[in-house]
Image (cartoon, rainbow, N blue to C red; front, top):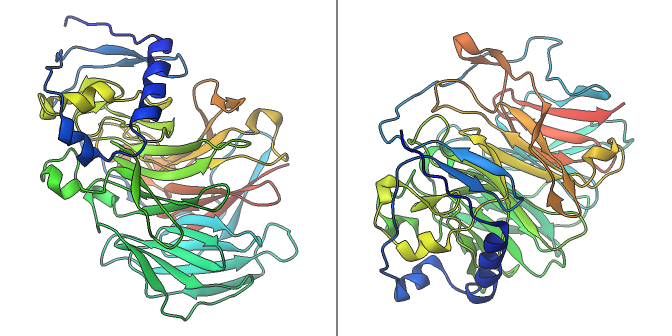
Length: 436
């Protein structure tokens, strides 16, 4: 096969980012359609080498639209005494068990630990459970059902005497006092959201700005690659920005197929997210990624991927957006289902981990061999990624030849004592990883 090599110079990538930050900050994807550029964008189906914004070279194979591989995992649960494995110098313990599909862990300002138990429609517990470790020994000594009757919740946030919950169909907030162990109030829906979505894209995550003046809401796409019509994708495949009362909504960044984990890089005002990319182009396309989120920027979905690589299924559509597509910062492997994100702000882990990012990879279902099913670490220095990711928490795969796994990691959160909690939704367990 003929190979076309395209390598965007780093200065060009950074220049395009700067232009986007200035000119696109208040424009939605729909608004850019008002001045659609009809200039043709060349399409070459051969492989590309892409220079990421961190100046790493990423080899991308040619897209294969006939790709139909499927290898779904079967969860067998954790045998007694069995648990994931971390690098030397760390210990792994069970923080909590007997949960029903725990997806995300949120640590409140008062150190209370909230776990959302949520799943696909019809299977979801639709509740949040509160844990409290009063003597900081790494084991909870209080467990209470905090709130029930939710609708596929995921994101949680304490802000301005409210407890926010992101259901799949809207953002709820409830009056909240620090230390409260149960919510029974009806609450109010401050923001309607498009519900549901393709292959677990029902999750809606939340994070507040560092000064608490804004809330950011991640909303995944309704489809794999816009196959139901782009009218179904309004306010989706994006990160929304709102005021805490739900007003003044705008699209902060778009073209993000399924952004789930969000966090602020330590000592900065830079928002980062991990994104699930699309299916159906081959075992090694398209890489999930970790990226800084540029205000007003477009990241390609569904027209292009990892820069201006055109998805052949959307060839000829929206060349204006293809030309604006930003190259993400860190590729995380194709079909890894990278969902959780947590920057490490503590000092208990060895120096190499400080200010770096931990990513929970839920694991593949649509490639020939398993990928993901682990927590990986991305090293950072001075607010920027400095190299390729490395394995951190493994051992979730029991027997790949039989498609068997013990569990699947999702959310990652740092505790005030400098340890990490990892939500294992299929294992119905929260794992704690601490430095020895």
